[in-house]
Amino acid sequence: MLPRTHGSALFTRGETQALVTATLGTADDGQRLESYEGEQRKNFMLHYNFPPFSVGETGRMTGTGRREIGHGALAERAISAVLPSIEESPYSMRIVSDILESNGSSSMASVCGASLALYDAGIPLKGSVAGVAMGLVKEGDDYAILTDIAGAEDHYGDMDFKVAGTRKGITALQMDIKIGGLTREILQQAMEQARRGRLFLLDKMDAVLDGPRKERSAYAPRIETIMIPTDKIRDLIGKGGATIRGIIEQTGAKIDVDDSGKVSVASSDADGLKRALEIIGNITAVPEIGKVYLGKVVRLAEFGAFVELFPGTDGLLHISEIAEHRVKEVKDELREGDQVMVKVLAIEGNRIKLSRKALIREQKAKLAQTSPAAEEVSEAEAPVAPPAAPSAPARPRHEYDEKQPRSNQSTILIEGGDFDEDEGTVEIEEGDEPNFNRADGVPVTAGPPTGAGRPPAAANNRRRRRRRPGGGGGPRPGGGGHQA
Image 1: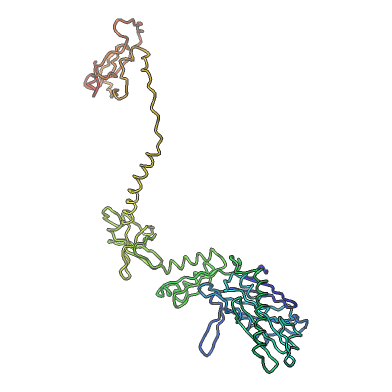
Image 2: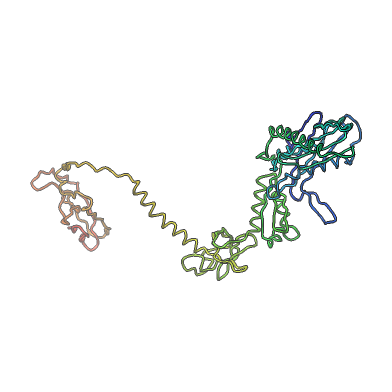
């Protein structure tokens, strides 16, 4: 109803109206009480306000009186019976009932409004609670039992009997009586009429809201509870509380630590809550054998490297566990500040043995298992090319082509060499240039076949080639020798 509160409800019955609001807090927000049994903590409070204007009067609104204390205590007892356990809902809850109009039982209106307000705040109650006030008018042996009495019936009647409870039973009772006593018959009849009236009210209330809302108000705190080892409590608190104060300043969350190791983190900001839980987890984490952690190299030694797993928790990565091959010096593989994945091999007291080599072996084993399977899948999925249709052999374009090899497998490539300037030059006719592309290794002279006509060569159509040092071109590997 009210957008800024954690939970709210407006309950109206006849000429009685109560505006009830619910506020959620952490365990540290609970009320501390000093009693003869020692200090106690109260996590649920119901405060009842009865201003003068609710009955059409004017007056000073001062501190609470007997009426406010008594009516608030009755409504608080009626609701306390259906509250969830600390494990289910670790909140401290405060209910404030402001009576806006009163011509009947305002305390029972507060009970009905408190139940709806807690549901609106998302608190999982064991059931809805409603209350009704019963009255009695008795004259001699004649009597009449009244349900949901008004102010005049309360004033002139002989009894004010308040009954609150759920569908399953009664959670609170209060009786004011002005006559000498009640018979068993009168009491039984009053209880039965109160049950019927309570069920009627519960039906009306459940028609509006019959359970806790799944989503709490955006302004209500979110509380997460975790357990940490008791020996880690001092690490979380820090020297003079410096560590826990730093977390609160960084995240804006509220943190409560119990002597049993129970830590409650509350924040209305989801990101701040997540960040606070992450920091607490890093501070109080305990390494486990067989688990893999991303650590930071903080110090190098001749026998290995010290790796920080969590703040304040280091482990030794021995030089023999850094890599699969033999490592001569640690600095050849690691540097201070490097982040490495390590596996916890053993924990002996405060000593933590780490290994990087074990992770490398595991990774190789996984790759070896997945590679054959991937190849089989790729081969199975590879499309099969259809067989090529046979084609007739191509006819050579020129008779010279018949001398060339028909496949690349029989082709021989001959590379030329360097020639010196001081060697003599040999003039070769263009038509007499050797051909080294024969597969049989016998050089032939390029040109038309014997007997064929050949156009006369021009006088200046000559090529100059340099000879290799030491004479003409020697024999080529796999080919014919060069003739000078």
